[in-house]
Amino acid sequence: MARGDERAQALGQWEAVLEARAPTVLLARLLDVGPRVAVAEALEASDPEGAARAVEQPAGGAGAALRSVGGVMTVRRERESAGTKAAMPPRPRPDRHDFPTLPRRPIRMVLDGVSYLPNIGTMFRLCDAFRVERLYVCGFDLEAHKRRLLSAAAGTVGWVPWESRPDALGVVEESRAAGYLIAAIELAEESVPPEAIRSDAPLCLVIGAERHGVSAAVLALADQRVEIPSDGVGGSINLTTAAAIVLYAASRKYPLE
Ligand SMILES: C[S@@+](CC[C@H](N)C(=O)[O-])C[C@H]1O[C@@H](n2cnc3c(N)ncnc32)[C@H](O)[C@@H]1O
Image (cartoon, rainbow, N blue to C red; front, side, top):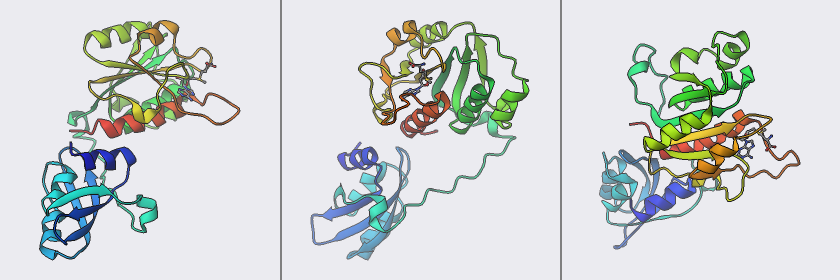
């Protein structure tokens, strides 16, 4: 990945300026900096031909698109302060008929002892939204037809691959043996913020229950402990809120195929 791409991704900034070797200076807005598709929209250019070439590049990263007009990409300013908004590409809701065949992110979500049905229902909804590979409800035998679960899940229970397991540790050990990185979402020593989550292998995320948190045995096995920095008096936040924040950060690193 080109250095400019990394910087743009790390900072979440899609405004970039192309500093050409020649006098050409192109201001471009990166619409997508995914690994497969790079689309740069030229905003201004002293070289209209170069701008046209940068408008759409099928592959190779945004850096390649910008370099194709001859230069080095540097992040110039934040999207918010740039006065121009980088719109997301259209995201049509998937057709229900095709949905089961669509790719899912290589992310497992493990609920370690979570038994409060509205929280489990919300986790179904999140796992659907981020199209995670599978949800593991651990610590008891889940009856997925319960009203409070269905109500929080908002119609997503049938769309998320899931299973109930007696304990989270078993799923974590299995996942580790299958090559998954284990990331415990927890307030813990030596934790990293969500944006520092690793993505060099499939991911197994573990989240704890309101009372007990992630079990000590799972924490001990984790490759990473991911913590959402909190500045409030409450300390911890609701587990589904924590899961949403971490899933969002992780999903940016595991784009759907
Ligand atoms: C309410 S917390 C449990 C807190 C636990 N009773 C304690 O005091 O240590 C429930 C779960 O949400 C997740 N969680 C809550 N706040 C978090 C934070 N700031 N960072 C990471 N995970 C968090 C963790 O997985 C935690 O186990």
